[in-house]
Image (cartoon, rainbow, N blue to C red; front, side, top):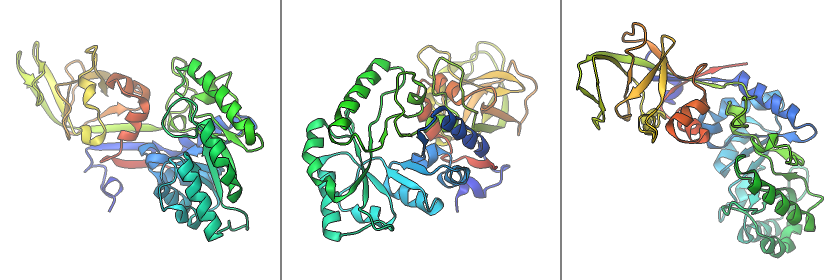
Length: 376
């Protein structure tokens, strides 16, 4: 049983509402921005924590034809939902896993010479073919500056003598975040120099969510949005062109009046400076609430919305519980619902208050929350 969907909302400590219609609308917006380039979708990490099955199903039915995952097991799950889609596995090919890609019609993104050798040898020995009778497909990831995964120029030269054993469908790289535009410019130049040596005729992909909106960035043939699909702002510092996707709410489970000098939380870090009314809500780091929401460097911390008012997190974030100061809010009682993310607090606001990236905040949600989907 998946406890996130089988329990009733009244039993849940936190409720994560996912707007599938907004995800589709965001993909459609990105598709229009991209013009002639195909718009795929990155659905790794359980669709950024929001649920692989419903998210892929919604996008596939809306016309998305290409999906990107990190691991082969995610590719197998995606194949079951999107039988005719093109599915790329981004994190390279593990030893002895080549048959999986052929069995489930997945495309490995090869990131090193050993991977090219493994896949080329498998193709040569097995003589496996695609359902249409062609060579098995693969993609190459080029290393252009992140120094994580990818082929350097000498790797590409060394491995290219085996590329006739399979069908190189895509040449790609991973760009830095948007704020590093000078780095990105260098990456694009290196990518262009590498791909034009032998693979200028092969479709290329370079743009993630933020890079789609960079004026100087070529979109090539295929873009790979992830964070923007799920409501994150792909253009920090400017208005978010994406629709909000997630809403996170929690129940108040106890209300307490504190006297001056009383402390809150396991670490006893917060002290009441006067009479305060606090509420304990049923949410903690077990539900994806960062402990840093009450321990930011500037002391500001995060807040929830109760009765339309901002109520700051206080004390420490526990695994299951956290307190908020509702002294300046209206009357709050046990069973009331507070907004942690929603119309007032965006996923980017939530992340910024915790001092983490929106990616980390988003993928951390839903571990124990009751998921509720607003369907198309």
